[in-house]
Amino acid sequence: MKSIQYNGSLYSPPQYTTGDGIWFKSFNEAAINSKKLLSWDLPTFISMISMYYPLGDTTLITEIKKNPWMSAVTEKGIELFDLPPHGFRFAKANVIADHFFNLLIEELAFACQGYSTGYLLLSGGLDSRIIACALREGINQGQIKTEITALTWGKKDSRDVRIAEMVSSELGFKWKNIELQPSTVLKNIDLAVWKLGCITNGYHLHGMSWVVENIPADSLIIAGSFGDGIGRAEYSGSHILELSSLRPFNRFGLIKDEYVSFLHNQSVVPLSDLGKRFPWTYKYEIAEIERQSQYMRNLIAHAMSILDQNSNLHQAFTSRKVFSYMWSIHPSLRNDGIYRRILDTYNGNIAGIPWARTNRSLSGNTGHVDPELSRSFNNYREWIATILYDQLFAMLDFDLFRHVKVLNIDNVYRLGKIVKEGTNGYHASNAFLWLIGLSRFNAMLKELGIEVMVPEIQPARFRSVNKSKRSRYFLSSLLRNNMYFLTREKKLYKRCRKKFLIWLFLLKHPFKTERNS
Image (cartoon, rainbow, N blue to C red; front, side, top):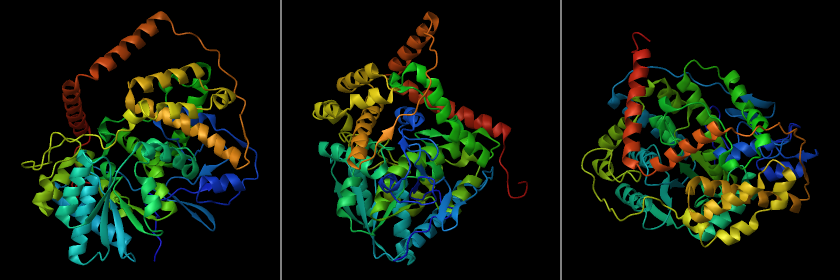
């Protein structure tokens, strides 16, 4: 059975080192084998609290680093890979869709070589549906010999589960749903600590614990996590022309005011280093490079990499041929239209199955709509705020929080209150679970006989916010909270803003054909 080749790919599983030239496949191995005194990487705290992932190659321990993005660990050391350029190439939607789809089939055919069976992580979204179609087409063409089973995680009455089942049935794949329970949250907290070094919190692991426990070792697992970014130039629901550079901030005031400036400035150093390694010309380029190297690599792919510790994970859309081609296309053309064209051309029945996000198909008449299905595939926020709350709150190690000095204990208690009240659900739950993970992580290190030092940081002289600034903060907070309920207005504003930014970008940077490029 061959091992997956990652050279030049956007995805590779992380490896860890203490700087002595020895690399390990897990954080724990690196920590146990370290001959150095270890210390907390406090700047990473602010990025974990605000964005739920670290920046650059950092971990929670200063002396332990991950291998750089776009690199390979070799016998001679670290081999760094370059990036293909972004471009303004013009092509019709059907041309882009056909070439893109054929490149995906080629990528998947290579990944499937040597595997008689494989598992596709299939949701109700578009990316995994495109991958499912490419797998079926590759099988029909004889390029792929692997028998595929689709795996979906979520509650039975959710759009994701019902839609994934319909897609699997239409394409003739075996299918299994992995139900999520309150116990899944507890299991994933420890999984993130023991397997991922607590630089991902348990909120993002979903049904991966089931996969780790039940899928045979060395199996092929295929995911489509990178599809939104590569195929449609979308990250966290925003097009790359709408995005700005990443900046961590003091979410929920969990960092003491006097330490915020220092920790922020230190945490963004990897972003400056990234700009030096990959010089960019246009704002959207660095926005995409930052999302790929930080958000995709350090959150989404890092969470998924837990599957690589037992099996062989292939992240579709990440082969150099695929993303090089899509990056060469004018960014205004990387949109839903590409997926719409692929689905319409490949299978009209698949195209008519709704998208879980909107409960509507991308084109034509939407079939199989059930308005009673839940939009969310999990009940994490409800479970965390109710039946799990007391157990989770008891896991918080306030002695550790006082010991590291930079955390605001009063605001940790306030965060607990916000979580219990069910307000600001997603962000509050994520910050809450990471603090619990940090507490468990510290306990794990002690179990391994590892003591972690707290580095000395000189607190800045903090000036209280004046009344006018307080008023502005209060007003902006009030507007944000009220806008939350103006769903239609927000969506309309977002659509109009996106169209305006694309129009403005096209004025400045028109299409280039092969003749004038």
